[in-house]
Image (cartoon, rainbow, N blue to C red; front, side, top):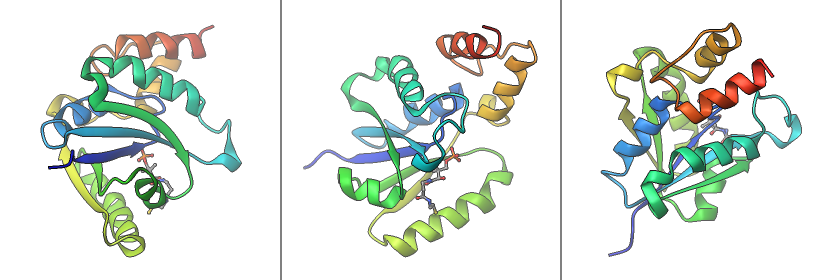
Length: 164
Ligand code: PNS
């Protein structure tokens, strides 16, 4: 039987422990996961980290998973990217109910464009239910710490960005 491959897309600006938890859970279901950093090529520079910086950090923090996890970036439609890499599944993490509406809309739109690509949702661990990249960016920018919410390496990179 062929390996099962899923794409785990997101902005990952930056990747949090909640995202890593979803990767770990995803690997119990799929043989391989391709973490895909989405960016808009017409708005490069709009995030805190560049797509290349995000990819490099994700590679470091996901190295424990070996070659079952690969990391890439893409601009354009997610479903086109899935076709390009021959993945039939998209993984998304769900936190609180607040995520539902947005995720529902995205899933339906992706299904409309690509009925052959299925989206599956994995629940983040409850420790990560209320974290997000944007909240973590804000906490670090304001001089706080987010131990256990963001990998140490990434916290260091955040501190470098905000307090060079
Ligand atoms: O981490 P995020 O910001 O919630 O991830 C959102 C993401 C990147 C998955 C979504 O914006 C996306 O799929 N972008 C790629 C462009 C695209 O396909 N847009 C139509 C989605 S319905």
